[in-house]
Image (cartoon, rainbow, N blue to C red; front, side):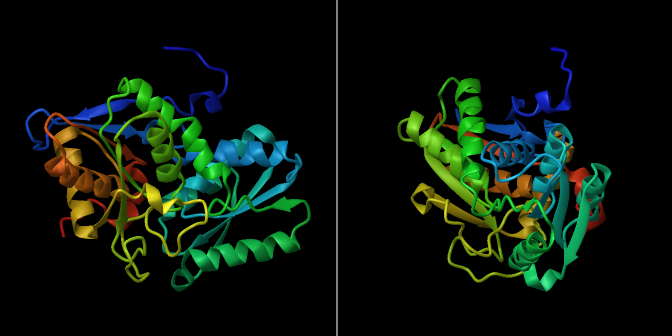
Length: 306
């Protein structure tokens, strides 16, 4: 294994695991990209670096300035990691409902947390972040929900890694969407490089992608209250809306069958992947993303017996 001099050098190039303990049609293979292996523990480590680097390079933020961002947690952790490298301050606006573990990790990395009411959702957090940016000098809101650097991050990194790891043999790509950046960037790259790849987006109930009304859900990290401008809905070859109960059931099964300790968005991604496996042509290769680990959701009773 290589020796590195900075934890930031460990972001990306995550392992790809073949899922072998769940029933699949004969000849069909299912792989999961283990994004919890990033140093900050999630797929959003990639985004944190890109958001900060682009802001500094474009002169939108100066060293010693302050980044203010609305986040469910993982983007905040990724930004806090990047902030250590580039010498900036970080303030994250987090709806109260999101896990205390993620908020604690952000604080451990030097961030200040401002909570907003759960009922105001992410829209309320975005509004509060913009208000704070007007009050705090030399501050900048990267705005992951509208920043083109978000999908660009995954077009540049995650997409190429998947094509390389699977030698271009990908028939179906399945991923959840919160801001939509991971799905959009990766799906667009795969569409550009591969023929006939099917790209499938996953959401929980209470998300609006499939035409539903915004509402509460226990699956964290995915689900939209609105469709960000950079999300190309033409990439939605299929949409799966997954119940919390199904996502959490598969989280438990991934632990006992595969030894994987993953968050509920991974359970939702697996559920949708297994549905796609039943529809895919014989011998298909399906790949999905496991964004983070279960350890940041223990206070949410992710392994409860209920």
